[in-house]
Image (cartoon, rainbow, N blue to C red):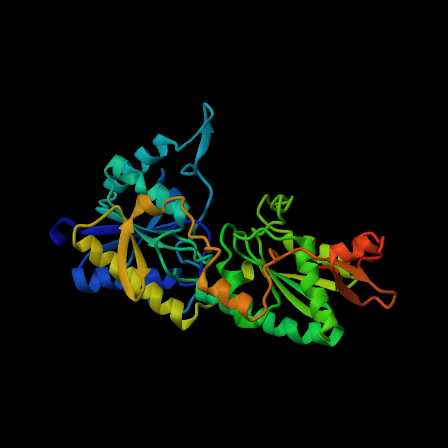
Length: 398
């Protein structure tokens, strides 16, 4: 099948992630050195193949030195004509965009595409076969939530950034007897929060998969206070939500964000503790990838080229256990790999005393000295007191 391929195209789509350039480098070097193929870099994701196309030749010289660089030399976007739009009450894709992409790919002599992107991008790529374009995918999501894949590149780098942030917050929280709330990425899956929370020694981890009770979170803080630990560290994924409540979005951008401030306000109201919030945001996406991510990204890029050479397409390169293999694009398009409630990591965290906010709810009282103490709701009612009465709000600052 290698004789049918002379020129391949590569694009990066969706949000950026540390390791994208390492994938591009591996694709170009493997295609050029092992198979003698030409590589065309497509700029700004799928949009770069719409008229007029925005492409450039990528040879070994063009990818020299990019292994440790964050971001993507091709640029990327998660907007444009390839997203789902509502038509006649249904979510559909614009067939005209796909036909134009196919026409331009043929005009450029591109025999196949390698698509670097997450579940949404792989969903777009899975439709390319309908217009006669061969494609193979490389998973890209720092949330580590692509279905069928044990580890995506960029996750380890984001995890390292979040864990270092927790390490730094420990010292300032202990110095001031504060509750520090760290908001990390994790739209639909809380893998970054879970791993960083364990690795950094957090006291509470809040993830989308386990809706939390604010009273349970406050009870954990109260338990620590009663045991002599005057500070607490709470890690919350941006997609986490209070049980029965909505997810939080930023008014300016329409993107997820704000749950950290909500959690801090709820803890302050119930405990009287001084609470501060740190939102890592895009710091997790930027910067140089870790050695692990550079190696994984290189393995993915090289494997994508090899699988194309074998005549395979419509598949996504994934890591399962220690093996790099593939799964059908359609099997992971739009599907999230969520944290199972009984996941070993969750069990481990609970076993060492980390709370997830889904525990049995208790209420808190605050004594006149401002110290929070956990009380049993039945005992409080028997004494004729309002559960949570007397709580005063602490400062909530970004």
